[in-house]
Image (tube, rainbow, N blue to C red):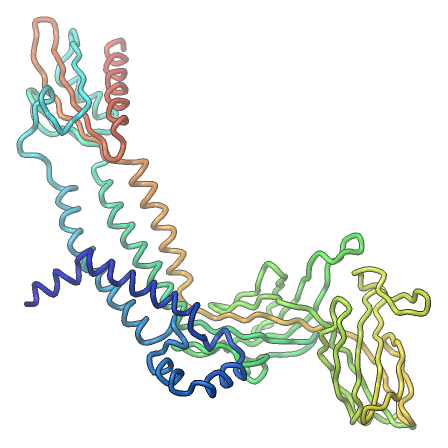
Length: 449
């Protein structure tokens, strides 16, 4: 009974069943609603419309297909199948590497060696042939009358390495899926972050295994890169818990262990202060505004509703505020304040300027930037890199340093020897003919030498 189960778990039929099952699960993720792809409000609204359907799906984990118990069980069986297949193949490969034919075929009649060569070597001996084959990289077994030579004897081990790489890549994928944290973090210049979950925008994707990032950092600087009045990039300065300064940009994230901070967006976080008629501060805050590319944003302060629009290179054309370019050479902000739906004041201000608000004043003290980071924490990346490296090395080893085998026979003549060779190569039939031509050339060159 146990033998039958073991045989089935290592069978090709079971492998195909698992592949089809996993593919079906992944296809379901495109059909069924997935929590991580929907806003929480939209998901709850759909669930309220079909409570029984969603109850069954959540029980089976089908609303989170990639991390569901069903998918995890299928992955476990897949790895078990892969391990058992490797367990079966290891002895076969080792046997092929370590053993050699007890009976050496006659090269003149050997059907399994398709390419043949017959050559007469005057004033030559078997020892000279051995030397030529050894210089060509062959290991020789047998005697002067009949011998066997093999080159790249260990090449079949690359098959085991390739299976190992496949195992590592799949394992890395599973580990990454179950330990992955994804969230969006907005930070203004001078602002510190110590891993607080409440700081993330919206609801971050929490890992099934492990904890969210605990990385601490301070946003030191934000420097937009502009060439010929066109925005080309963004350089962000970050200081870690140890006081070390790091830089990140749009294409190069800051990494701390397995956590990466990728610059995702840029905005303006002006310090807006409301003062009374005597100049005393009544309220104030750094307000993170999404006003890039001419967009408008709103915020509330001290009972006022304020609409903001940002101009990076401010100029006025026919009485209308505009940005002359992407350069941040003359920043200004258009602020329109209202209360209870009634417009009170509107003005375009630069840093340090102010406008009146029915007895109070709104002061725009400064306009630093804020940055939105895509924060990702996941384990398993190094396993994936190791798997791909091993797979590449194994394929190169298998395909370029492929195994070559030669059987030979020597007959003594009065003037030298008659040499008969037959060759076969893995994967490439024509390579056997090329190998014999190369051996023949080496023999001729050796005779000339």
